[in-house]
Image (tube, rainbow, N blue to C red; front, side, top):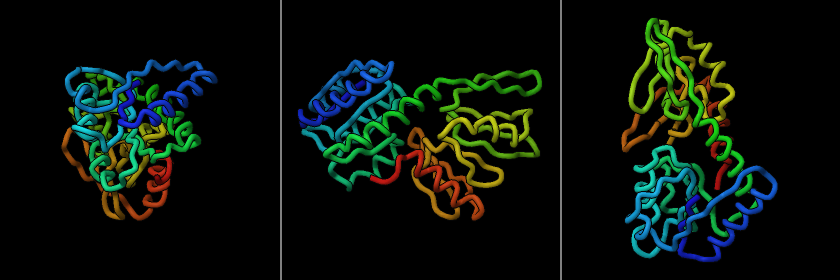
Length: 235
């Protein structure tokens, strides 16, 4: 667990909340703390969770976030900020949550509960069979699934796969993961990569790239509900 904030009171507050979680769960957190981002950029620290302040002396939190994501693309990052003007840029980096200062304890605990579940789910693998081929795919690496020539096409961050299983099979298979939602009768998307959407399309961002997939009127309301539940509501 990495915490980077130029305000020592915020660092203490986050550590206290994490300690409270560890007292009532099986989770234990080893915290590495920094008061500026410059020190982080000089290190190759691979971690799974980070709390990053945006406005700090030296490099800002967005630069720190990019650095940490290069080392671990699946890192779960909380942006801790009082500056709303950076939120659009942070959304483009697929950060997990935004926590406003002062940090609300209830929101912190709720967000960490979702994050810990996501962490465990993201390490799970699905097996994809296609005739004589067999692929192991991390669920977190899936961008979206769609129907192509009556078969299911699975698009990940690095590859495209065709599955023997029907779209309905994958729809039921992914129900247990709270970061997948259907945007169209023939599209299921990974909410982790959604940066914005309207009533016509969903934008997925990853590795400085953007992909757009359709959203239909009949799925708009349920997709929006799933997105807000995944994001933990508004700031």
